[in-house]
Length: 77
Length: 365
Image 1 (cartoon, rainbow over the protein chains, first blue to last red):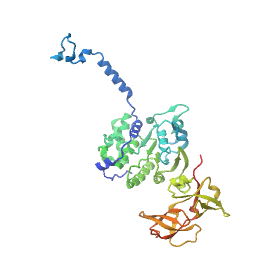
Image 2: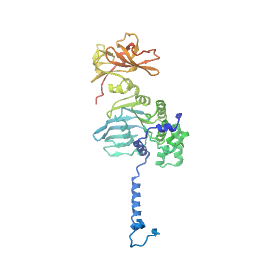
Image 3: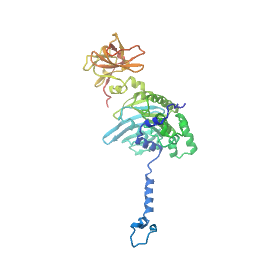
Image 4: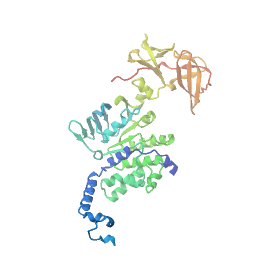
């Protein structure tokens, strides 16, 4: 036994389809076993901070705004 | 799989959505939760699925306690082995049909070959195997709902839950899918919980109906029993009884009842006993039980009136008849029964006393 699929699948019909409710999407994802990946996001932020912080402040500054007494940045060339 | 719900309560602040609900659903049974918007039917379903955390109570699915407020047990939704089909489909538009169906299996990290096999099995069941590679956004409403159904079935759930799945489809497609859903449920022997506010859908799909009002079950039973013997006038009204009038019932020597309709000169004979009427009694008559004739009949419940409205409905004509004794009645006259009357015609409306029910306004808590 199988269902018969006779109704037309047109773009117009797809546009007429109901606007999906965000709550239903969330529920479908939860039932499928997908949880919000909050720990992954936290690890990404920490990694980002650890990579950026050790860089010397001057490396992040544009050569034109660098202090006059210091050696010219390679970027100045 | 058997489901047992014990003393379930769900509160949102001071508002009680579900009040002390007790319900047992047998293995392979299709139970329909029927009721108006806001009566707590979807909340009950979401509590069973684990998508809503009840305030108190206990839920057991297949002898496994999935929620117990006293013992602090609350199994996550994906560990309860329930499938759910939503009113708005919730099909992911950026994926193909097959990817949508395979999504949960991938989360479970099954092998590629097993995923392919189970996806095709589910798509065959819902008749969508030729559409496996089509983008989900290009499907019609009916096809999207079939994808949602395949996505639930592919997990081989213990319980299938359907939250008003046919509400967004046109009438013809809804009628067809209603029959096909019932076929699939019977074929797979699935325990089904179905939420709807449509009594026709409930009658067509249910082994048993639980009617909810104000967060509690007010009547439960087989569809035919619910149709024939509603427990209150408000339930009768919800199940499609259109002639409901306040009355004063009086017992007769034969054990039957004479009901005097409030604010009118109409009296109606009922075969029912007056003591069954309960508090705030109302007389209830179905439109299809009224017979309309051009001449008076010998029956006790036969009243003259005038046709005020006659609406053609294909096989039937729906009449609004203003009785000379006061109230207006809603009646169905069949073209095939040879009854056809025009607006302004004087007619006689008759009903068998066995079809007249005198019911309390509400079921007491």
